[in-house]
Image 1 (cartoon, rainbow, N blue to C red):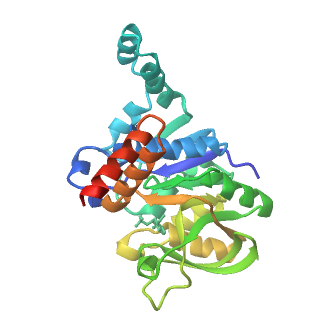
Image 2: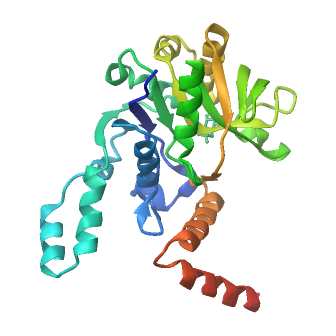
Image 3: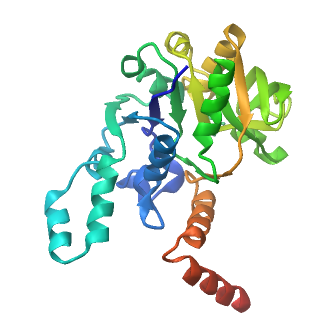
Length: 289
Ligand code: G1P
C-alpha cells in the first residue's frame, strides 16, 4: 500500500489564538521565519507525499497566495542580489502539488476530512493536522507510513500524555504488538476520566483507508455538536485492522498560545541563523529572572 496523497484540514477559526487570528489564518502565523503550515507540508513531502489537499474556508485565501509564485517580489529580490531570499520565496510554491477545497460550513474535523473524498478516490491517504508540529530526526508521518505499509492498515500517531491532558485528545484502547507499535481496539474523543481508555492520545497524524469516507458520511455529530474524525475512527477500527505508532519526536500544539511559544523558542534554538543568538539571549534573560 503506497501513500501518495495527504489532507491538511485548515478550516478552523483559530479561536485559541485571538486576536491575531481574526484576520491572519492561524496556519500562517510564523514559527521563526516560516508559517506553521509550511512545516507540516515539509514533513509530508519528506515522508514521500506528492499531492496535498488543504481544506480551507472563506477566510483563508492568504494561504493559497503563500503557496503561489510572486514574480514581482522574486525579481526585486534577485535584482537586489538577495538570492537566498528569492529562493526561499519560490521554494514554498514548489514544495508539492497543492490543491484546495473549502469546507463551506464549520461542522467539525470529521466533516473536513470527508470533503477530501473526491480528491483521494480509492487509495490510502495521510491526514496531518495543521496545529500539530513535530520536531525529530525522522519525519513523524514516515514512521506511520512504514507501519501502515507493514500491516496494510490504517495507522494513527500517538504519544503518552499527562493525566490532566487526556481530556484534550482522543484516548486509545490498545493491544501491544511490537516495540512502539500497537493495535487499536477502540478510541474515544476527549474522554471524561471515566471514559478514558489510556493515556495514549492520538496526536495529529493519521494514515487512513478510503473506507473512512463512507463511515464519515454517516457519522452523526458528536462532541461539541461536530462530526468528529475520532467517531469515524472508532467505527473503522471495529471494521478493519488499525494500528497506532508511538512516534519518535517532539510534538507542539501550535494552536494554543503556550504551545506556540514553546515551539517558537525550540525552533529558534534549532535554527542555524538565530540559534546561537537565541541561546545567549535566553541565558541573559534567565540571569535577570
Ligand atoms: C483534534 C482531534 C483529537 C486529537 C487532537 C490532537 O482535537 O479531535 O482527537 O487527539 O486533535 O491531534 P483538537 O486539537 O482540534 O481539539
